[in-house]
Image 1 (tube, rainbow, N blue to C red):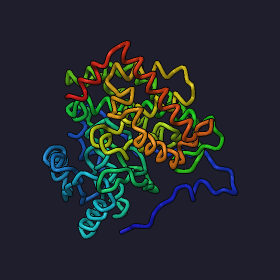
Image 2 (image 1 turned 60 degrees about the vertical axis):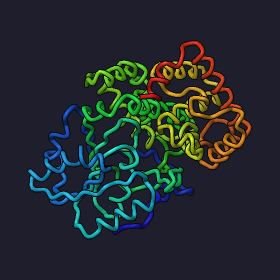
Image 3 (image 1 turned 60 degrees about the horizontal axis):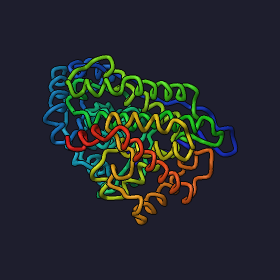
Length: 395
């Protein structure tokens, strides 16, 4: 088993040298309706004989069993590992220990962001490639070579990095549609931040990506296409999810939520939106009630408010129309709750990505941006209503 931490910045960001532009991505990305029916063919490219399947109890009974049946028909042995729900070091180590003697050639991680991230962490410890099968398009975790690690209580704790991205990401859009609208829309919230954060990093010569490198022009362009795809297709794709239909608009947004956003953030960089979203998890009521992408959506509006961007209202209106939070009350937060705001601000300021912004990010400027974003969101909600938001939160 390998437990030696990997620090990509030591590879790409020696302080006495020029920091290179670096782009990383999964080896293969496969997306379409019903593609899980061909998973045996795809996995055959890895030349494996024995695989582990990490999924929740629900996931094992659904996609896990479906995957195992296809692989067993191809002569591949499968070992099930039940994910208990939290991507914590305790859970990762427990699974890595249990699977260490199974002689696995590969680990398949099935589910949303947390089982996917846990799968990457476990596979690294086992020194085997990881195949990601997302069941949600709610975040951009599937393609990256990192995992967000949480405490056993669910608060953001740390980030682990890995030398290789997933060997394969297989996205069955029929499975994504079946997961429901709220998860899908949360993925749009996560993905929309990609462009605004990558743009900041690309223009700031001192900013670096999560792996410690400079952003690439390719990831900058991918981030821009990601945002435009969401603006152009987001509402129609959300309607397709409600209707249970896999159409072109849906396929485009799933790709934006997963592949474009995944490459865009990892090779384009993070700024203020994601540090704020991670800081929100320090507030129990927010962490337990809201999805990652819903928190990122509010973080994006706060970042745009700090930039004084004219795009803030356009983004807020788009978010409101698809049901994402656009003001504090929609995240169960009050601008008068000084203790909560102080916790969020202090946690955000400790995150080095927040300081990629082109202006100093201080407790004062961050609080001011939060208030301005809240006021904008309240104004937009008063104008166009919160019907979509209320529908998703009660679904």
